[in-house]
Length: 266
Image (cartoon, rainbow, N blue to C red; front, side):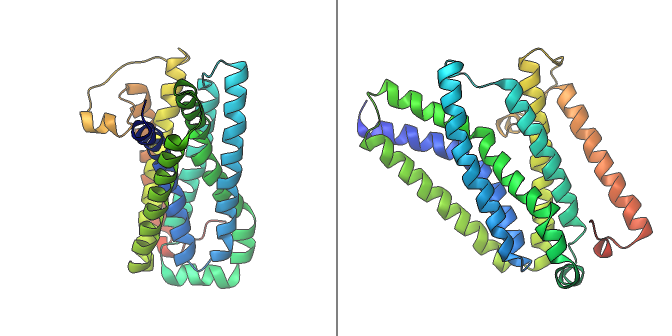
């Protein structure tokens, strides 16, 4: 296997597994930067760094004790916890979409709100988004290295190139966020996290279905949705639809009592 082939394979592994986590982190960072809470970026970066270390440790455990196979039930638990946090943060952002309301939050209670539960939620989302695929990524790269005679320049070049691509995409996302008004940034981040939360729910259900812990009743969906990671089963779609209906109902109920832009979620 020549160096170029190894570089393409290792780079594609890191890009494929890393781009989703990068987008989650970029969305959270854009929200914090535009909202004037840049001091809280350290929570996101701490969660990301911790997840990378945890991924390496998990890969070692999988390789030594499980023969290189990842644990579906652990992955399902991680995805479910990540989905809960993403859905919560999505609602938190939606309720602070009004620039005036956000500025008031920063001035009056941001330090309390952002330094306690919200900071922890942001760090955990970053951690889980990276850790969800991190251990598996390390295992894939480890297997590729073993099959090609060990770690070499080709593998390293692919990883460096993929890392540069992820950083460029991250920078592009931040630049776009600064060109948009504040409210669209909040709304887009909220919508993105909500969709990712739904996607993680579908993924968790799929992991449990693979373990025969949940039934599997397939449903016909467009191929492009399946390629995006949609779980084409009634079980997954039913739960996702229920969550979506609950979210819409909650928004309508809150907007009936108070203007959405003025609601604060503690």
